[in-house]
Picture 1 (spheres, rainbow, N blue to C red):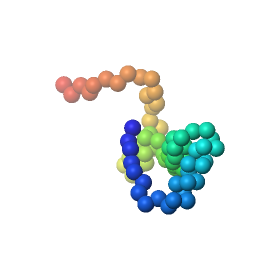
Picture 2 (cartoon, rainbow, N blue to C red; picture 1 turned 45 degrees about the vertical axis):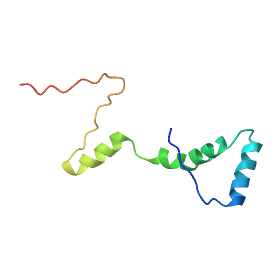
Picture 3 (cartoon, rainbow, N blue to C red; picture 1 turned 90 degrees about the vertical axis):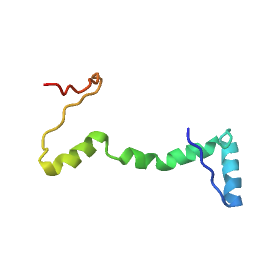
Picture 4 (cartoon, rainbow, N blue to C red; picture 1 turned 180 degrees about the vertical axis):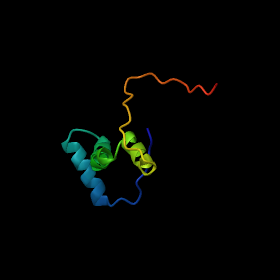
Length: 81
């Protein structure tokens, strides 16, 4: 898990975060929850990989849906004739 430091945070913000964490019965773990909540909608609204691939190849004439590969085993490519 990554770590980062927030410098020069206003004292009243720091106090408010500690108070909020205490109200929810947790430590400053609350800050992680706040950050996750703040970006959750942005993450969920991003198009998935399949949509990004389709958009990338759309100018080349890709109009058919690509088959779903969920649950299938990946196999290495065989380039031998």
